[in-house]
Every structure is written in structure tokens, then in C-alpha cells.
Image (tube, rainbow, N blue to C red; front, top):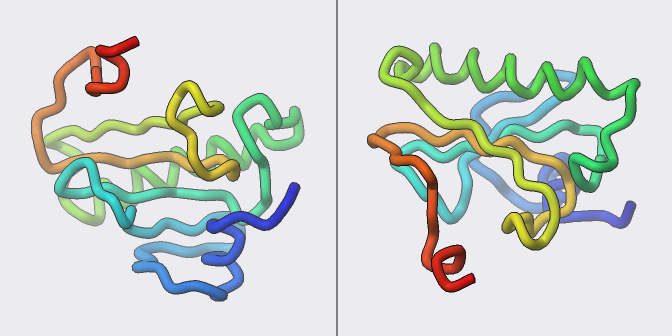
Length: 121
């Protein structure tokens, strides 16, 4: 897999507002937030899409969700609720091909989560 924007953040080649890091993952604020709280939780291992997650990556993906829950509790929005989203491929809106879990909170969120682009389809 070629180097991505997220690889550069992991390697500290470009700055990010990092809120959490451990040996497996990194979490930082999205530069184009779609909610009052919009974090990205990424693995340090480069995996392009959900389709590329291998059997040996199951614990890693579970760890991303564990980090999301931990951050929700620590930041005080766990009880109010939050949304986690992982897009897969261009049609889903994935723009960086390094899996990442969006953690969104701080406002009521409706369902389905239509966007103008989806309404046009």
C-alpha cells in the first residue's frame, strides 16, 4: 500500500490534533468536522479498506472500537450517545485509503444519514 495522509500523521511528517495514541492506534480531530466532536481513530498498521482486513486483523479492528468507547467516556459524551462510521471505497465517501473509524458526537443525529450527494443519486 502506498503512503497516505494518515501514514504521514502516524510518522509525524504532518501535524494533527492528536487526542490519543497507543502502540496499535492513533486518534485525532478531523480537519473537516461533521459534528461538534469528530475524531478519527486509525490503526498504525496500513490497511486500505474494510475489504482488506485480514483474519489476523480482527483484534486490531476491535481495538479501534474500544478506543472510540474510551474516548467517548473520557470526553464526556458517552451517555448522550455518539456515532461510529467506517466507510469502504469511493462510493461510500472514503477519501483516504487507510481504514479509519469516524467518531461523531455533540449533536442529535438523524437516520438515515443522507447527504446532498446521496439525494442526487
